[in-house]
Image 1 (tube, helix red, strand yellow):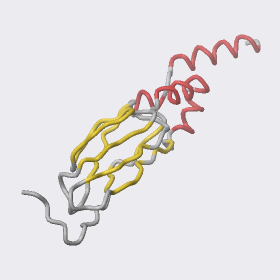
Image 2 (cartoon, rainbow, N blue to C red):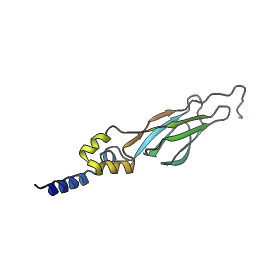
Image 3 (spheres, rainbow, N blue to C red):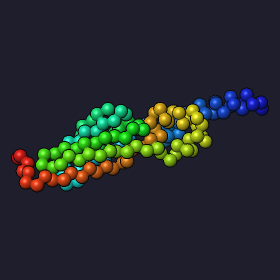
Image 4 (cartoon, helix red, strand yellow):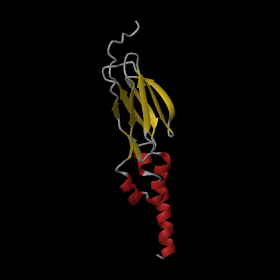
Length: 136
């Protein structure tokens, strides 16, 4: 088999496996958000990948995977605001994708966000404000 035939075969094989993480892990993920000791807090999530979303804790929501971290700000009367991030990191299976799907598979996973993962369970601590009485 000539060099050109080998390259053509490799390209065709790579096209058969569009993206390992895209196929096995998907492009969305369920993420849990909680404010222990302060249920009912309103949290605003924002990133270039997801835009802005508002949730009330505790909550589980499905997010599109992205390489962008998600900024979180939680608010509740009589509590100091909680601010933090939900970090995005690269899945370990991405290295295997280069072997199976090649550059094409890696590219598909990068574009779809499938090679990234958020921390599954996220807690944001809210500190009570001394002397504050919530309205009933």
